Image 1 (cartoon, rainbow, N blue to C red):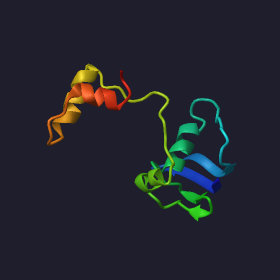
Image 2: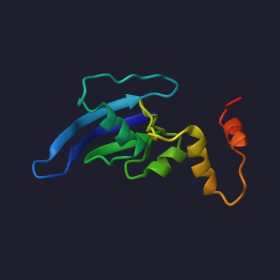
Image 3: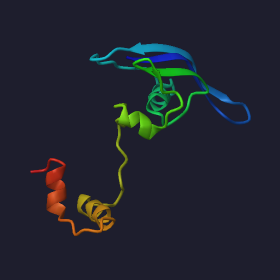
Image 4: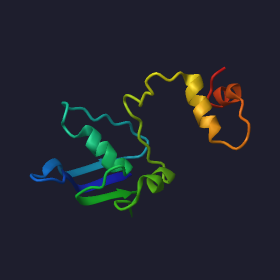
Length: 123
């Protein structure tokens, strides 16, 4: 179970903008949840707080009773917490082949682009 206890988030600055205020929320295992609301309502901010992209100004986040509030995004990912963007980032002007070539160039071994596509499920 994911348990948010009094989670608040404020953007620092001259006036300090409060985005989330004292959110209490329990999300139980093996359930599907949908969070809806208007633009600017705090949905993405809440998701980023849960994922560890942003740190809450106050409150606690517990996962199965373990306090994960101060864990970073990598530590939370290892516990199975992930974030899927509604609109994934796009690389304007790049073709898939060029993006794969850029990724493969960082690998010291020779990489076959068709093997990479096969690995991600393209057939």
